[in-house]
Length: 144
Image 1: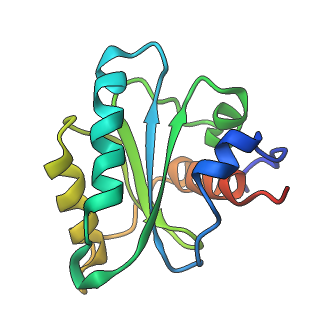
Image 2: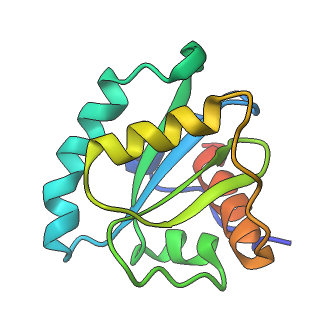
């Protein structure tokens, strides 16, 4: 069971409104000190604003600093060591992908489109990663 975490600070809630439970959710997992992440964040944000996922499926997103105490608590036993990393799954459901990616918007677009397709990728089987996903979703949906 994911840890119970306190409500996120307003800046996290403002960036990540609670989506419907079946909506795809793309989470950038980076560190403020990471130069590659700082360069990739504007590209991530541009993709979020401009990409239409296959089958016109809506998605939500968040960009989180893994060294933020609340984010680290939500991740639990999962230690993000390679940047940039992402987590992609259903807001109220399973994690579909968690890991490091090449910092290119085309990579994110492909992952989003694959997750939205009728032949979506298999659910991640790692229990620690699934618990981290649930912790992140709890953090991002926490009430005011």
